[in-house]
Length: 91
Image: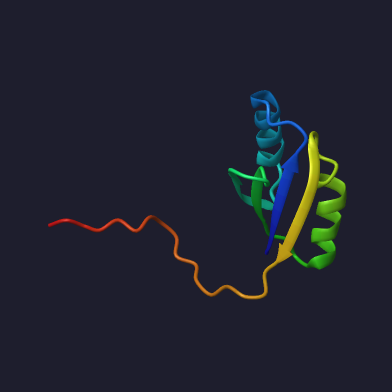
């Protein structure tokens, strides 16, 4: 599992939508969030191994339309993973 922080050259709405449509078609990208600040998107990417991720990075993510830069962080371990929303049940 790798987290990729993606910066785009343009944040015009049609460019954001084009990037999101492109990412939606990549099965390696399991989650995608648009952010406020220096980084435009953070992606959760899952690959079989480091070589597979490197191929994905160089052939699909970095050359994607409008991508200015990609910074990645490889996870070492998962300390907490709780799906869902923490909603308190009211009786």
